[in-house]
Image 1 (spheres, one colour):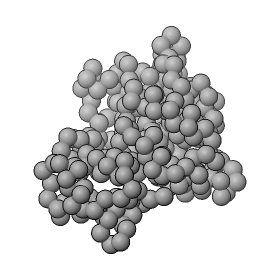
Image 2 (tube, rainbow, N blue to C red):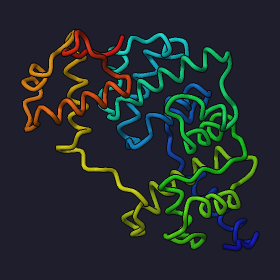
Image 3 (cartoon, rainbow, N blue to C red):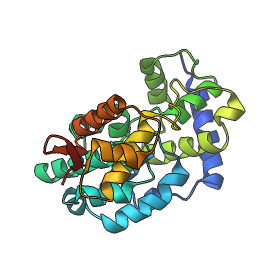
Image 4 (cartoon, helix red, strand yellow):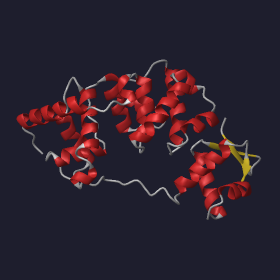
Length: 270
């Protein structure tokens, strides 16, 4: 899709004028240091801003530096993370902190960031944008919706086409401000309900899902030293067959969150 420069200029002016009067005051924007941005971006993956804010404050109070996170005791880390969901993100964040310490500095390229545990294409670009103000464009659900609603994109466009358009719309030299403005505009003005534009993928229902059971297992193991499968069945007290729980325990073991003790008991990794 061809974009005329005057259309791009007008769109940028509209977004930035709106943002000047309506910018959200979010804690990770006040101090966009690389570590703070890393923590916030991982927390914000599939989690609402309102839920992240209090956890972000608590997390940085306890783990204020890469060093403190890298040396965190896993059970303590998961206890602090509790409430955000997707517990493997906390473990991967700790592993990423270890990798940063090992390399001696904070990565500043997409390839370097993607080598960190749990960091994919979107998160690597977001870190470079928000921590280093690099002239890159990132496309999330909000930004995709804005581009479609503004007439720059279609709902059936693939990732590459959307990325090409986002690159063209980028306000160069102010990438951090530009993306903050787009995030706010998509969250407050061009919402999914006001536009009727659905995301490409939808988050699965939490209630009754394996994700809910995974979270319950982690909470149970945080509060004790170790548990066997039968004990876990009693603690969870939900309609779950033993084979289903064994499968979930295998997933948690593969993720590195728990380990098997004496072949039949489980505990949080140290």
